[in-house]
Length: 407
Image 1 (cartoon, rainbow, N blue to C red):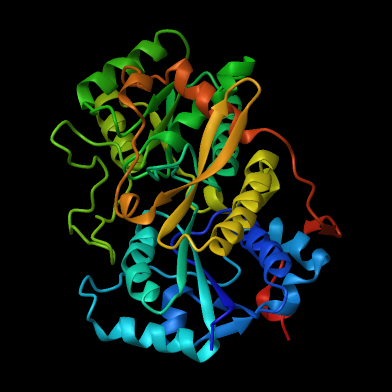
Image 2 (cartoon, rainbow, N blue to C red; image 1 turned 180 degrees about the vertical axis):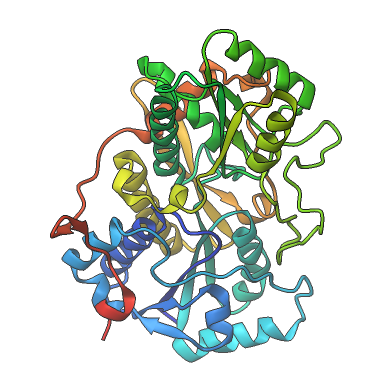
């Protein structure tokens, strides 16, 4: 019997737009596969291995609930960081295919980043032997996926970073005491998100005086000179740094000395902001403060970018059309057509060309340490535009909760 049901999962770090992509997939699936069941993986591929799936078919036909899902942060289905074995003969692949047969799955959508595309690239060839289509759908606030102009989730996170750094700069400017405030922004190996701290400059608003990306080697002595230069002009210095800033030899400034690794072999970082504030405190004897934006960067739905959310829904819907065409092993991607007016089209790229790779800020868009080039800011600027109205009750946002919505 031909397997016509669909399965969707979310993986890796959550974003403010990953549920919008899920909503787009559900909308498209309800329209393109009206006779099929739509299942969700609970906690990504681990949920399939452990036979933890939920039926999303009725939810996919409820526009009001999908609207709520669209503007809810985090990953509604739950996430995971699980690396499939590189040996295609590993028993996990047989178990996954057994689950697909059990639920009549003919199409699998996996929403995630670099590491999630590793899962798609490994699973697609085995699944194809049984006529099962496996597709990757991009997400990450880091904006570091190859093969796509940008990623869903980045625009809203960039909007949060730009807004937060502008507000921090306003706050720090009220005192005459010499002080340095260092704000750490997510982005292990690519500086796209940290660069967003410079966006307020485009409209004449205050923001970080100095901005450091991982693509430009960091030097303590140069950093000290740049801070002192700002001090010569005013008493308060604000700095934005990527968590992944590194020295010329590739060592992370904020590396954990214990060298702890995650499931995909990424070094866990201890905190670049703390390292820099300790350094400045010792060398300059001034007041210092370290701020780590941390999780709010990826879950601050009160600052959603309408461009980001609408594109996230759109790419989810497009994934269903690609599945209908049977293009397995692909990741959906954005291709920028023009900057003015800002326009993108949706393409596909083989998932194996995205898996475990990092798209850094191109060299031609880099600026000297402590600065962000106008070209880079103009690339990011369209992605944060537009506001999203959130459903509220008694002044607080209302969210989609899986256990509450599916009985």
